[in-house]
Length: 328
Image (tube, rainbow, N blue to C red):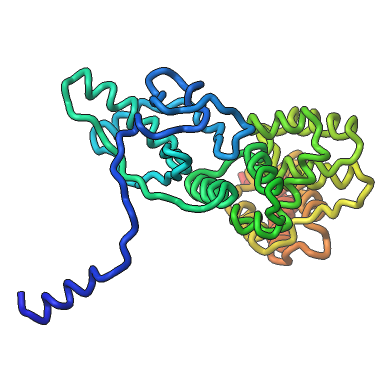
């Protein structure tokens, strides 16, 4: 390597250094960790619950065997974020990785293999900034359910964090965060349960919670759940508008939807001409005009339907006309 190349190579590593620690996962503290399965517990874990700002209910989600095997074979590549609280290294973000490393180490010890250690970076700041750091990493890795989001949001706001700042921490719009707060205040127990179990998406749950009358909200929820596997945002939005006495505009006038409808219709075969199939095609045209809106429907779509219906009528009339007898 030339002297110039060597100088450039050295300069490329001329950056600020941050403190990184390599720690046995058993020596890290997980808030609430004493309530986890025995193989996942560490020596300094606590038995705190959701009252603690750094408690995360994800610690009770079971680890998959595949996840444990991966850590056993390759270790933990992504550093854990910790905070020094007193003389204890408390896990801020990376609790699942620490749990997986602990289980893997139990197995490695039984095989007489050296234990895995994890790289940790220290996060300094007050409890509010540590809570924010935990939320940021968790939200980036996997989207929480709406109830978990609200629980973390309430902890932030209890420490004086504004709705606007909370939206930045969660990476959401202010309107979305305000919707979570409204959900907490207005949603019935049944709506919250449906959201927690995944029958309602977070957005659909927030929309359904806009129904002001609790009994009406329960009735609407039952109706939606009986007709849909997982209630969509649009279904919940329209249901909430109807329940609150607002007018619902039934329209799919966007061009993308119309292109899909047109493509679908173009690829269909009209089959054998008969009064039954003709009536079906006429019904398709009427239904599409109703759903899309007669003024908004794509002219090409209507034209294609009219073309098919015209063809059907022609074939039907041809079949009704007496056919000339063949010359003997």
